[in-house]
View 1 (cartoon, rainbow, N blue to C red):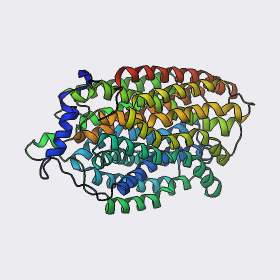
View 2 (cartoon, helix red, strand yellow):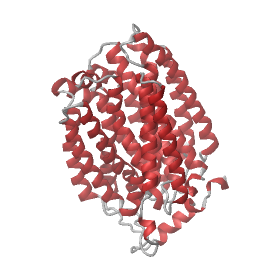
View 3 (cartoon, helix red, strand yellow):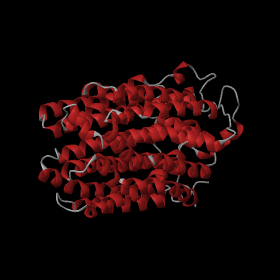
View 4 (cartoon, rainbow, N blue to C red):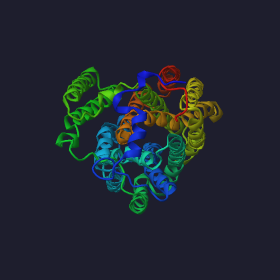
Length: 492
């Protein structure tokens, strides 16, 4: 079947990509150093993504203990989560572009170092404000690290079918952070306090840096030689405007849910709107915009990223609310709550490698549609739990969402990466992760605002019962969008 011409924009044509790979010079154009052990390179990149995801979920089970010791309300606990995800999402575009310019493996090392230092600072935080600041710096390190792990994989596995399988393994192994997070977090909080959930990152970072230095060759597509100084510069105005827009939008939602009132939330939304306008203006004038127009004209690329945003909006928002439900409404310990979340996280980790193989054979569309439909059914099941219902009543929602995200994750990442040429791999990874992480941050904010404090059990559960079907509708709409935009045939 012939591909639609709507996905063949000049800057992202796949046939041109393959030609460039065959004729790439070793000097000032494309630089490529093929790794002798691609399997070990893939494993090293999985460690990087594992750290990023671990610090999302390992914190969730520590929130009630952390909030009690640091005298924080629900909004403060939301910012412990969102200061990390907002910084991560806001800087991914810039970080992905920097990786394309400076080399992906080098950028991974910088991200690991910053992430490890911020983890140590978070573990030693004396106050909520200090902790939120350290979490934001963690997010900066994660933003530098995350898109370039995807780009290194793209460099290491140039064949699109092999890349789909590798990304499936990457998604599966890194997704082990999701089931490991609640269990590890529960054990650490019980045994050593909430500080341990951050300090545990430090030895892992050191090991990952050693492995990256020894195993990952210089990679990426440094843009040099005759293109002019402007092509080497990041769109700083656009990056700043994007950061401000996202941060103030999430702040507005959190403050609205906190009861700060229309003036505070409205002012924040006004700043976000102005920053978004400034971002659009900066992008039109920039010599090297964060979001190149040609990239955004690809229906397949835009569709895949919108679906990725819908996935994390519902998924991360539900994880936040589920943690509060199990601990605050049901009264379970952090460790027990972590174990009870395993039916959500285990299918996500277990199914991702299978999804990678299915995507390589059939293309990303079938697993994406299947995952969205199964996940929507799980979200509808959020109508069932009550304050006195058994865990079995909550289980269908966890299983449905876990299976849905397991079918989605590797497929949606592959759909986005296959829609661009390989010299844009860092930027594509940045855009995809920006969509996922910003939507995850907004999911925590919206779900937290809609449910309110779990101390008010009836209002909290009423919010959950509304959010479940509403999020299911978002996922069903994403399924329709997938059929309309993502190519049906497997990559060649």
